[in-house]
Image (cartoon, rainbow, N blue to C red; front, side, top):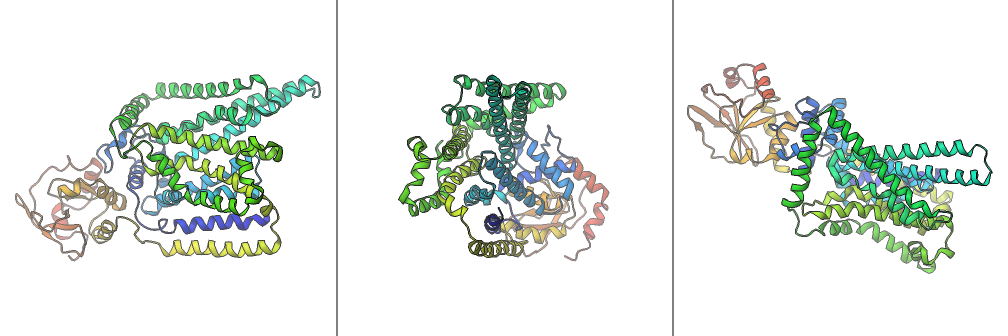
Length: 553
C-alpha cells in the first residue's frame, strides 16, 4: 500500500486540476442555483420539509420535488453559514469525495486489493461530466451517496448469506458443533444488511425520486451473473434474490405506512411528486428528441476511460488479456478462480449501471447529468479491466518507480491546489449577471425588496442569484426604493412616483432610484412576509430615500 500512495495522490491531484475551473469560482448551473436557494431558505426557516414556500424565488415546480437533498444541504448551511457562495460549492465537492470513499469500500468488499482502489477512481474522474457535476451543486451527487451505500450493504448481505451457507454445510458434515448458533447469527446479519440497504434506497428516493431505487435489481442480477453457476451453489439458491427483494419492498411499505400515519403531509407531497413530477414529466415534458439520448450521453462521456483501456489493451495484445477477462466463460481454464469472480463482478456492475439508465429512457425529459448516479458502477467495471491488464506492473513497482511517481504526484497535486486558489472569485458562468451584481449589490441592503421590470421578473435565475447573494427579493410593482431593468429607457414615472437612472457602469442590468416621496401602497402582495418584516425593522421609507446606505450616488 505504501508504494501505491503516490497513485492515489495523482488521482486526487488530477481531480483538483479538473475542477479548478469551477470550484472556487462564482457561478452555478441553473439546477445548482435552484438547489442552493431552496436549501438556504430551508436553513433560514422559510421552507417546511414537506410544504415548500411558493412565494420564494426560483423554480415553482420544486413544490413537487422530494425534499431530503435540500434538507441535508440546509444543515450544511446551518453549520457553516449561508453568507458565502462557497458554501454550496464546498458541499458539492465534499459529496464527491464521499462518493469516492464509498467506491473504494465497494472495491474492497468484492475482494480487490486496497492498494488498487485508485483504478476505478481514475476512470471515474476522467468522465467529463463528473468534474462538472462536482462543482455545480446537483441533487444527483447526494442521491449517488445513498445509492452506493445501499449497494455496499447489499454486498455485505451477500457475504453474510455466503457465511450462512458455509456454516450450514459444516453443520451437515458435523465439522462444527456450534454451527447452528453461528448460522442464526449469519442469518440475522443477512436480514440486517438487507434492511439497511432498503433504508439507504429510501433515502436516495427522498432525494430525487424513483431514479434512486435501481439497486433493488441487485439481488436478482447477483444471482443471475455471479452465483447461478458458482460451484457449490444449491439448486434452490434462486429463492434468496426473491427473499431479498421481498424484504426490501416490505421495509419500504412499512416505513411509508408509518410516515403517512405520523405526518399526513407525506401523502400529499408524494401524491404531488407522482402525478406532477414523475407521470407529468414522462407524459408532458420533452427536453430531447429521442429516448435514446441518455445512451448517447453515456457513450460520449465514457470515451476517455474507454480510450485508455483500448490503448493499454493494444499494448498488451500479445496474451489477449482483455479478451480472456471480458469473455471469461470461454477462457475459464486459462483464468484463476479469483479472476473469474472478478470478471463476473464486472458484468454485474455493468448490468446494474444499465438498470439505472433504462428507466430514464421511459420519458423524453432527460438531462446529461441524469447519468451521474450510474457512473461509479461503470467506473468499477473499467477498474476491473484495467487491474487485469496492469496487474503484474502494479504488483512490481520498485523503489525507483515509486519515487518518480511520488514526484509526479506532488507536482500534480500542488498544481491542482495552486490553480484552485488562483481561480478564487473568478466568474465561470452568467458573467454579465454576476459582474453587474457586484456593482449593484453594494447599494442594496440585506433582504431588500426591489421593483423590477417584467423582463427581469420573468427570469427566475436572476431572482435566485440576487436572493442567494444578499436575500434580495423582486416585486413587479413600482414603489420600492430601487428599480432594476435590462433597458435604459425604462418608464421613469408611475403615477406620482419618479425614478432616476443611477448611471452605474453595468453591462446589462440598470438600476434606478426613487427620487420623490411615493404614495402609500401595499407591496405585501409581491413581497414575502419575511421581506416586509425586514423592511419594517429598517429606517422609514422617507429616510431611505435621502440616505440609502449613506452611499453617494
